[in-house]
Image 1 (tube, rainbow, N blue to C red):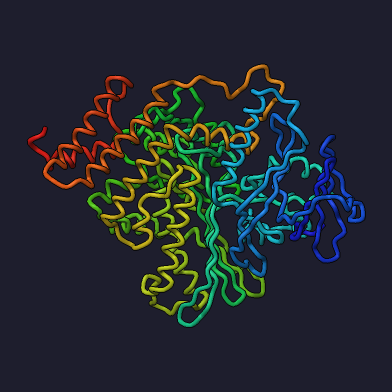
Image 2 (cartoon, helix red, strand yellow):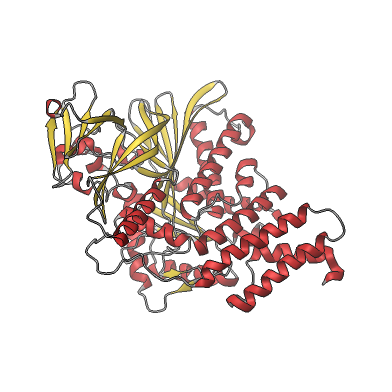
Length: 589
């Protein structure tokens, strides 16, 4: 069986069946899904009824069982990202969810409402940007992993050979995966970020590619999923690969990010930064060792770069992480702690060079992967940097972009694109492409985990920290605060449903969605929006009463929150703004 899936498909719908027709040259296969029995079979084109309603589709994402029964999810729109060694890479941009049932008359009113909510959850996940696929190339593996495979592996279907950590529709494809004869209809879909750019330095054209693969194990949203699970899977684990293709030679550099691999939590509680809590009864070493055993098997040596604060609420996590590494006493694992915020305070981001100098020899030792135009492996990457901050988003992405640039510098010199003594930083056209791509990668990963764009992207895009960047970070922090406290529960439930961590049972006597809500959690978002709107109106007003209006708005809101909702303090961005106003208003305090 060839390692490809069908590229051109047509969906034919009758009241009894779905027919998915393969329209590739020479193909006669038709996937038949019985809408009553849910049976999946393989047929031929002549069996498609002329009365069927026909539409083009671009892939089958899979099937899911909800209260009303089974649903078929198909890709209805796609955008071309680029070509990857003559393989086309696509982004799925629109989907359709089709019910097997012809009517909903068998459902009660409560079941109808629950089914509507579950459909909204699936749509919510599908509307998060970042689903990628190829019908001819295995996107789930790095270049180095693919170079070290057997002929038997090469003949497997894309679904069989895929790294299951990065197949986000693995649960949805479970019925198709059980039948090898229909695997050419089963399309593995990656979630994360991919960009491909054609570049030129010194008149030498090359392709530069950045891929971030988001793991579907222990997946979720910011405050609801932290640390590791019993299998050692880390929250927000992302494998990022940077690839260069020049004159037939290919080079790649792989890094990983993931939550601090201990059993800890940081559940939202209306505070701006909930206190991280380390589980006092869990066997941390067991989960920790499971995590790094798998990482060493997959990637080789591990250089941990821990970017959390070494004081305040983050300090216990840093200390526990360092203690675990020391206790494990593995020659394959090294630990580097770098207090990002302390070292770079007062916008001294030039001090990141301290960390780069500290790990330079380690990076040279880990090396990178390089295969020449004849297919001969010239160099192999012996391990990876595993970076993390609290969220594995903002600080982490900054450091990963610097490490990737240093590796790219060495690769392009070795390939002959850069002359001896030339620096990437001096190639202004490419630097713009590079910085923007890494900033876009940061935003994509942040939106998928935290619900907003990344912080600190002004440095990634421009190479310096700006006042405007600080303002935008404050705005994103406010949006994160709202989402983390008032909408991320729905986002987490949606991801769990999509990935199969929760299965719908229509026979449940009580609706799993009928949970009474605390009124204060319903009231606070409204109050915050009103208060913020009042602030904006006041800022637009002219006259000496400006400060007075702003202060009154915030003080009244704060007083209400403290008195009626038992909240001790406003989130930090609000307090900062209030402090700024108080410095201006003076007499009104």
